[in-house]
Image 1 (tube, rainbow, N blue to C red):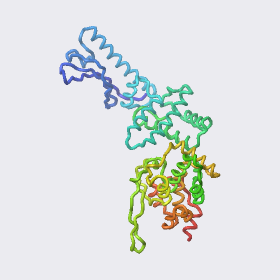
Image 2: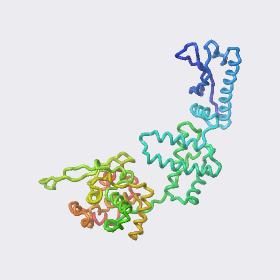
Image 3: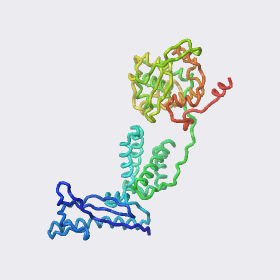
Image 4: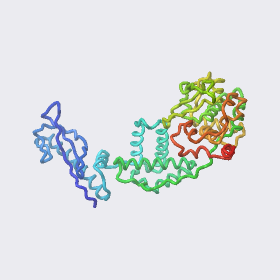
Length: 419
């Protein structure tokens, strides 16, 4: 049996407005740690309260009912303590308080997840996109548990068997990709770990469980000749939406913007910087992009690509805020339609745009002479590969960790360095 010395005590809090009136509060002391369990709501004259007897001494029917209420509070506290002792698990005073506030029932997994989400929503360092991702996981788990008639599953019972059942549901019934299943599993583990650290539970049922790493699939990206196909393709007059989606995607390919950053791309992100000739004799001003990424807050810095300038000037008065940005899910559907029109084998998504930029930077081709027929200014730049450090800066990443998911160095880079 776990040995933890516990004391439940009522105490009188003196009213500031009336010093003769006290409110009775309930307190727990566990192994020298004290927590307040809350106010009983009972107010009495101070002379009618006995701290030694832990009772109201007035001999009235009201006082008798109030003493009965105090006994109920104490009984609730003792019942919770006895149940915890039977579990033979160590517990904290903070955990006891949360159980008391839950009337001894503890937190179900869905209640724990809801509490976790409330904290995430208030955290200024967590983006709305991250919150939406966590919310999507909650909705899926919620629907699954309700369908299984296990909506009241205690958080401490969300065991290895349960998580494997959920992963099977996501893989077989929902037909979700391995990366999505991995993300859901990591989020569930994160919620349970948070519950233990914040005294909502006395154990993490998935502690020690490791989410298997998925095999990294080759990144999908477009090569310069494929980008030219996309640039030169003429949509029918009634296909305005597809034309706009094409423009947005191409801007991603030539800036490396994540979709969330494309949505907030404005003229204020475009600056003008001095560029000197190699001999220092002449100076011209180069359009330059400096944009804080929504996800990380890091600043992406790069010259504004002539293709991007040409797209903005031709159809959007040179102002990126005039771009028509549709929801990500709809955009990906339209991109698939565009890919079919161009007979692309590769499946286009908004993330392919960011991967394309990374590939053009590391393997060369960002300023390919192929693009000169669309934007002659590309010939003012040397076509070649960028260093990994420069690529990271242009993409607004914090490090090269995870960069392999975007791009693999190939024969173009090797040939470029040989030359």
